[in-house]
Image (cartoon, rainbow, N blue to C red):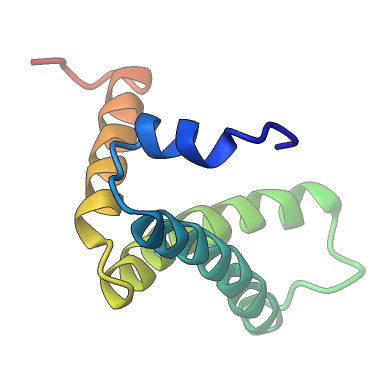
Length: 107
């Protein structure tokens, strides 16, 4: 990220025309990431996961909680910041990749 043209490169890659849209997208990524931290703790308590729980259980539970929470956060914050179409397209791309990886038929 030390590249002075980073913003312009990302804007071209994402097909974003406005710096303000780019900034909103970056804020959405940040907020979605931070929201996962706040969701994980209470859910772990609710599920009874504590320091004595084996690491592998914590890890897989974390994956099951964090991944969908982050994706939902991207859509929710994307909507709030007016970037829902951008994030919805990214979600659809990701779902197509998962469908190919996990045996779904490709069209």
